[in-house]
Image (cartoon, rainbow over the protein chains, first blue to last red):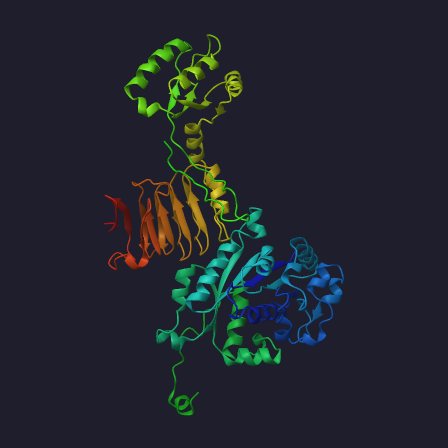
Length: 269
Length: 257
């Protein structure tokens, strides 16, 4: 049975889809059979980030409604053989996701894959609760600012009470904290919450800190998951996150502001 | 003597709900019968009522049958009810009776009440489940609160949007309580961790209830209806281990040692 990972946050725009794409690509690159599902029905974006938007024929809702089978709907990634994308429907709304339907699709996918990454929509409504309901692990994506931290806290409460594991009294969902858009210089200037601040509020296992990076936007626009950009700090940080998820002990990077040498200062780097 | 009165708001429109269903606890006088001689009961109770007629007038009473001798015949329920009504009381129910006595009580339209002293002791000794409620409503906690009496222990972080209620007992949290979370208890509240949410101790009006915490950063602290919001909590106690209690209707926050 595959391990189901939900990428969630509560708040929008913090980097859930980027993280879902990075996580899925990272796992697949390490040889794990992985599928990433877009749960944001009506506002689908994952296909753009994964660069497969022109190959979508059938989607998640078609499969739930029995209008297509999984083989027809799954899109194989061109860069990595063991990665598949299950896109969301852009024309329906989130009510199309039923607990039974989602459960059946996940069970079916679980037979042929090692990891299922669920990209949750923002909010705590139906779409988000469907994305997390069957999860085994959760990555809570948080920006270092108060509203994002509070929304993540709220989401953690929902994870611990409204999931299948909670309802059936099983071992609770394993929760991980991922801090994104982190800018150490701004933390030093007191303009941003530090890793320590966020961890103190959320008291959660930290799985990674992704620095603010232009590479993320560029990668999104190009449809290439940023984890493939090993030159960029964000790409490296996401790679570390995947390694940590798989149990490797990787030290945290990009927590300190870079010491600017005389040359980079001169060139404005 | 009702400990809490609930009044339904008058319907504002046809769509407004006509009533609310709530659970509430009341303290009622219990008459514990020690013998089957109803004439003796009438005589002795009569003299008691004479001493304090106001106290017994229209007072709901519960008859406790657990002290009756096991042998010696059946209790004359119609006579008992007649006696109580004659003295101005309203018999509402019985407790501690056997099957036959309960049957007779039912025939007189008396409620069969649980032996709550024993029940609450049993429930308090059981491990209390946590009332995690991801939704912003308190439905879950209130439902559970209506059914269960006793203290509640939670050893997980209480997250923003969660509400916990310990009905009739203390609430203890081992872990942080986030801003936007709400803890309520009829008794005391203990938080072993930073307290950043709202706490309401003595929810049913117990003015002796207290709040204890390791690190006070609460948004609101309330005891039996007397409250302070974060803005009115003095800076010198913020972030410290404190106890909060009522002193002559004044909410006091004092550092612990």
